[in-house]
Length: 366
Picture 1 (cartoon, rainbow, N blue to C red):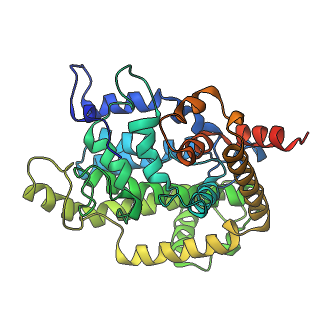
Picture 2 (tube, rainbow, N blue to C red):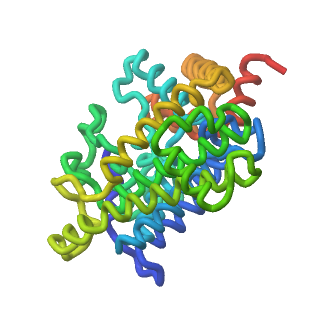
């Protein structure tokens, strides 16, 4: 897939290039639809649950803080963070996994991968200009969205424009976003899970990282049975991870910027010097393992995700079998693009509630 050449050019504008990118992303349709796309919990289950939109905002806020403290380009980190989940399907990761499976069973080897889909949203699927597709974003933004999550090499990317060299790491700002994403989803999944009694603090308190945060909260004079404990725990976890990341990355970033004086926003053939300390990395992995077993595999979550799978499967098979079920825009796209891709793009663009509505209409359910 060849992205449009125009993203390498800058128009005259009083904004800097990455601020212009950010504004174009915020005003696009795909960004607005994130409000009704599942993060972990189906968003109509409760008003408190995070969605893809609130998650993206939280990642952006953390990424901006990390970049500012490390002397990186804060606005570039911001736009990568705001864009990084634009390609997600309804029903969270299970929706993308189901779509990937369906496409590969039908012989469409590229399957579905949400980072590449986010890249396609920005370069192909969003249409705001008469003469070309996409949002006309800078190279650094597009590379950051495509490659912020390691590993970058995927079999279906062999035809990608060679300027997006998959043998190189992306910018420091992109890697900051990857870690900000991890900080955000770990902390807010604990918050949501405990708020709705899917897990308890007892479930996670055997892990070293949770114990470290617990000590911080108790040091504030807040005990486990206090009403404020959950809020202070989540804030403490974010604070601990942010401070660990900054302190462990400062020296490496300073050296990298000295060796690469033109810009830290360039790609690199060597691993970039950002990340958590070894101790915190190990402890975070153990905490996430507990969350996977006790929260993400909770029977209530699994039941909702199974329903999402069935919805995606029905939509895909119905659209593949009967093209007239597709809206007029998608019918036009069938004339110039493979049917598998048109159907997958349409399903991926849906919000949870819209996908469920179409599913019920097709299935004859009330």
